[in-house]
Structures are given as C-alpha cells and as structure tokens.
Figure 1: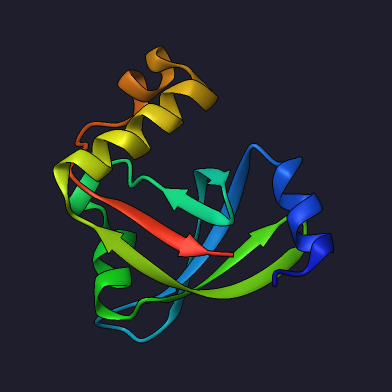
Figure 2: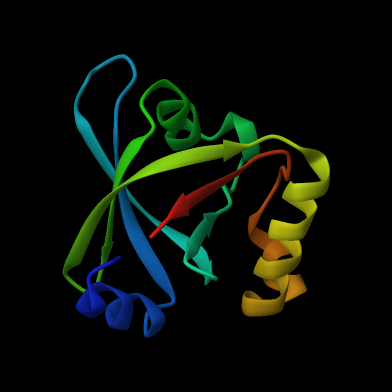
Length: 117
C-alpha cells in the first residue's frame, strides 16, 4: 500500500517529477512529466514516445523514483508497447489534460509506462 501522504500529494498535483537512472552514465536524471493516476496505477506518457531519453532509460533500468510536492516513492515502471493499451492511456491523458494539449506537446504516441503505486 502506498504512503497516504504521497497519494494526497499525487492527487493534488498536475505533474510529477520522475528520477531515472541513465542507461549510459548511471547517474540519476530527473524530469517533470504529466501523469494519470487511476485504480492504484500511475500512467506516464513520454512526450517523444519511444524516442524519449527518459523512456529509454526506464527500459534499461525500470526502477524509478516519483516525487509529488516533496513526497517520494520508488516503484518499478512497466513499459507498455501494446498499441491498444497505449491508446487507452492516451485517452486518459486527453481526458485529464485536454486533447488539444496532448496534440500540442506529444509528438509520438507509441509508448507508455505503468507503475503500481
């Protein structure tokens, strides 16, 4: 079960900061990302799809840290490559952020991440 304080921070945030391990450098790399939290699962959609550097790092080392308003958890990130499932995640993002915003910022919709929180 996730930390209730983290879940409160998560539900009142528009974005989270993820920290991944660089696949070449081994260094911690942090970046802000939009997310959808639903049914105990956190979904992340890389802006440049499978070409996003943080996504490539997650493929190499799936343990990531998620921070929301100063609260942090470490989770295993599971890449989603099934087109139908990715489409479901994209629809969740459109519902939360608006279809126009997703179209404006996301250039490739061929990958997503799911993490149990």
